Amino acid sequence: MDVLQSLLLLPLFSFIFFIIFLHKWRSTHQKNLPPSPKKLPIIGNLHQLGQYPHRSLHSLSKHYGPLMLLHFGRVPILVVSSADAAREIMKNQDLIFSNRPKLSIPDRLIYGSKDVAFSQCGNYWREVRSICVLQLLSNKKVQSYRHVREQETSIMIEKIRQMGSSLLVVNLSDMFVSVSNDIVCRVALGRKYGEDGKFKKFLGEFVELLGEYSVGDHIPCLGWIDWVSGLNGKVKKVAKLFDEFLEGVIEEHREQRKRDVDLDFVDILLDFQRENEGSFLADDDAIKAIILDMFGAGIDTTSSVLEWTMAELIKNPKTLKVLQDEVREVARGKVEVTEDDLDKMHYLKAVIKESLRLHTPVPTLVPRQSTHDTKVLGYDFAAGTQVMINAWAIARDPSLWENPDEFHPERFLDTNIDFRGFNFELIPFGAGRRGCPGIAFAMANNELVLANLVHKFNFGLPNGEREEDLDMSEVKGMTVHKKLPLLVVATQHAY
Image (cartoon, rainbow, N blue to C red; front, side, top):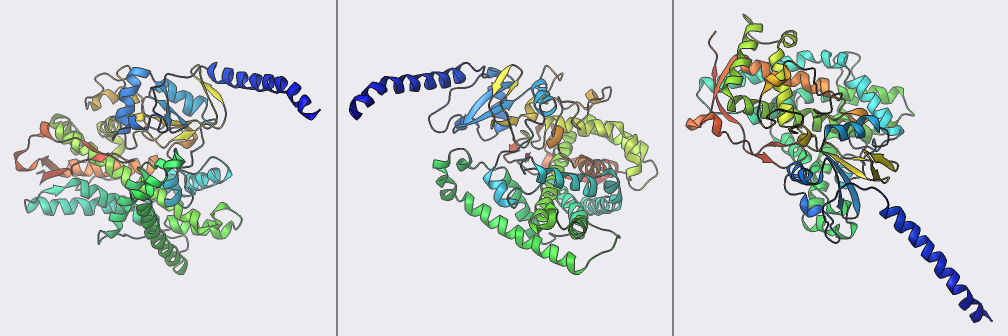
């Protein structure tokens, strides 16, 4: 009897299974998905990323359009390559796309992603971001560190002057890393670190690792590759070095507690921790993670912007001359440019904007992730879709920019387009809830250093190299730097 009943029920079960299968098939195939390149088994489209993802994705977008769906393993990746699409993601649907995917390398380097940049959207992220914006990176706080920027810029200028007077070739790339490092260390930690070169070395390794791709994040069955390649070992080593360093810094600050005079970032965060016992900063790891954000953004991206800007100026000597004339006119009779002078230097600001356009420091920004099913410009996307916004490609879109591959600062003199997240054709710092909160801090450093350099020196290339032949190739990483260091001959300007 049981067998007979089972046989009678078999057609019913088969019909129910067919209905469920049909519903799933229709729900998948009736969705309006964006164009997508063909993918390979297991790895999906990973093979199409290339050594320079921003360039590879830009090339693909020319064929597949400004919204393109890739798959890294089985993980759907939305690639955004137009200002309209970026506006939809970072403004109109900013809340839906405000999460971060869980990535193993930042997670291991930055204390379970307890920083601002990589932490997932939620109460923790909202609180630590609020602390950074109000306590560390407000305009008032940025201005309070003016003396640090001016002192360290003066030290850099004097080093270059001495090298120039001895007819030595100056490595501007190293100079920019050093001055950015010294400013951030004094502001964040209270004093300089790295005079012996060790700190800068493992800081460089830290930033380089943030730009590495972990196969296991998207294809767990291939996670062993990260062990065999040595990537996991490098991450473990650098994480340990930084933890030991930051542990020492925090203990040093606790022993030498300051009171309302020259407070650095660690002092401010420790004071907040003492006064708010139940906050998310009760854990020292959160303080360490926030400080690591300051290093990554404050040193690496700042030195990258300065490096590319000076490279473009040297490659374009007429543009350099226009900038020098403006800076020297504004600072006439002064030994050094101060921050009081910067607001009068409109061409300087245009030069930096143009450099940020052509050489977006983090070309594909930090990835986002959708929290709900949604539509973007008529296409359907499922919750959990990761988003790569190719800010580099948008900034070179010929429908937005005339002669987009040319360095032409004049394009910004008669426009209100800015980089603070309101104009989506220029988003080097992102936009919306996940935009960079340290723009004011970064730009204060960039403008002061650049103005003093062009005020004080004239520049040429060593060994008779012609300006137009200057190598502008890139090195891969989360932050894009010049592949070859920027070597110059600097001669002091005669007033």
